[in-house]
Image (cartoon, rainbow over the protein chains, first blue to last red):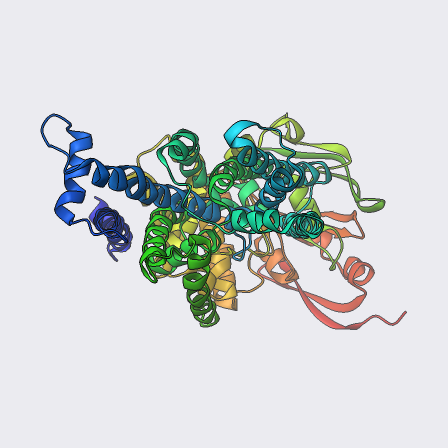
Length: 356
Length: 257
């Protein structure tokens, strides 16, 4: 019966299009796994592939496989594996957050940091480093402060927009305004601070995965395991919101509520990651655009797949950053910008031709 | 579905856009709203879909107050076609129309929902556009897609805000015949904003003319589309004849004051 109605093959064409997207997802996951497995075998120290994988297998099946040596085990299991995992998880979360921010704020230039979250985190860190004032204590006193101020920024922006019923454009402008306020505050703190502390703030703000340890992962992973599936499920309403506010409402979407929930949960995801890694730019902006160029703008596809693209981008960027002028590691925050800017310019060029 | 609008008043800050609007639309009626630019037509339609909250008065859908209904409740009863829809990201036409199935998604299988999308595309004879990018369509094609989306919503009330303004004459008639058929055969209540007086005359069971935020005429085409009304509302002199028992307006010149 379906065949009779579908004499022009519209449904078939639509299904084929969706199958292609599924195939792409499978290929992407394979690439990520293969590249990650490759990345843990390469580094400044000469460790063979065989040895690297024996460590990993030893950790999974301690009784079956013996570890090559304790020092190799230390490098692979305590440095490289958590670093690759952190790159994957951070890339995945930042890209998903970006993929959500863009349609929610109805702006293709939106990124996870559009609402001023990263400068909020930077300010929190600077406050902790320079003045020693933090809401946290112990080893996490910088991280806790960075998290607190980044969340505070997005909550303030969201609350103002809720009270004043502002448009997404006004929210973006407010985010920019807060970014400048925090940047100025960071500069003031640095201006009067000791030069050692100034450079510590600077180093903190440049995104880096060197803090990617099992400890960090044990903090980030549980929050992301709850938040990202939630965001992916909730993102089914994004197609409505990106088609216009009145359209979305008339189709039964509670736009204000959906927007607020998506923004607050994304902010939580972003704050959680950047308070450990510092600002890693461009992934959250570029990954969704790459995904759209490949599979179109259906947000049910764009949000989860952006996550995969972001994970791959970050693990590749970090790999290049670590091995380009080895043994010196270029921080990931710099690598993503160097790789992201040319890519972004290319995308802008494509947009002009109406592809995006 | 019967719609009653009682003493509706709407204002942006202090400027009153709609004043003392009262009318009733019964099930299956096809009603046109006419009036000069800035008369408050779009505002009225948006109030009727609950997109704008009216300041005074109430709109009732089969006795239920619109102000007390949730967005989902309203979306189950009313479909709305706005003047312009612009998706900021490239969405396939098929996915765009599928948005209309939001509240049917969990009730029916994926296959059935896709089939309904296809039916809606066919009703507007745009199935060949299904895999095109919505943003790359012409203005008229976009309007048809959004009308298809509203049909896919399967509501008993359809609100159209200048939904045929970008279509060529053939496609205008195609959409009007479709809409007329929906109301006559399936009992769907249609309320549409139009600019073309002759199309309104030909296809509406009832015409409401808004002027400066107030209803200045309400009735069937013969009662409403008179020389005097058109002169006082639009400020033009016209010649009115009859074609197939419906008034036909030929605009002549601007009325000198």
